[in-house]
Length: 502
Ligand code: MG
Image (cartoon, rainbow, N blue to C red):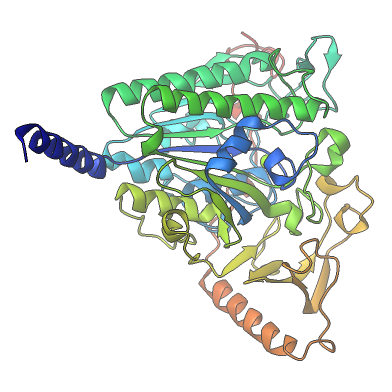
């Protein structure tokens, strides 16, 4: 072997070794109220989602992926902690601008798992895990070096400043009027109040690409958490997307979100880190069907936001990592709960020493292997120890112990989804085969299937074991609200909340 070939072999070996010890980066993209049927790659006929479709074509697309709650805040608590929201106390419902509580600081977030390994961390977009006195619960106190975003939902303020492009066309519906106008925050400081929604996605994507570039230049591993406001009501889109789809305001805001996904991918490519980055995309809960054609779409799944039917909690999800994750589609069971353990294992980080509900997805992602997850629990938006689980999925079967419709899912012809469908207990539980009947229309009857009593016995056992292990954390949302905690750029001004404009 000549000297040139020896040198080349040594260099190659060095590169492999360097790559092997270089920890991967993580980009976690989270949509809001986006349904199972909303993306082009999940079968929507008129959505324009070329970048998410590209992500799906080059990555692993999940068909049986679940969030832990049919509403925003609890779902986000699970995503960042790997625990059902009953443990962290993010229930009932969601946090508001003046909420006293928030994600408890003793909960360990994905960002806090990665910080000891030297990761740069940023949260960009919708936080919705609390603000509290002096910004106690903001991302910068939860493991994130940077935060640029709105600390809660963008309908939690008088949103008459929300218009679609062109600016004289109003967005659809009403917002909360007796609170401060929606602020844009940088770390703990209010940067703009009210925020200009039509520039927001651009500001977010610029900040995110700068963060990726700066981290890549420093050769520092990074974690970017990008929870977008899209496609939560009320819809908005800047000039690059408004009026550009045939689906209307929802399609336009989805297109704007999709464009951001494209910009993030380009930034990873340009900075030469795309082959060392896991990009994971999913959504917090199902579509807000009460918004009719201005809300999302659950595809073949029943109902949507606010319910424990499949449409409320089964989400589109994609894992993308060129050269590491083989493109494909998986029917393996997985959840937002599994993201923290997966990231921790890929980074070589320690798991928090708490009761974790997530399991890592390593074999699924890297080896086309099986999921470690056998079951999925369904709590309503207002869980209680008294009622316990509303439903449980074991393998391909789902048993409903209670059903209830929701205002947020009213608006379709299906009565069971609407607010008029009251709490209904089932004993024995209502049982569905989600492979034969993903729409949960045809309950299995014991007299038709001799194996059903034994199956129900197994499901009851899994439920009893899980509930025996569940310790409800103190309700953070139950601590109530104090209007003085609402973020105000001019703290001494009067009269509030209307004077909080800068
Ligand atoms: Mg949501």
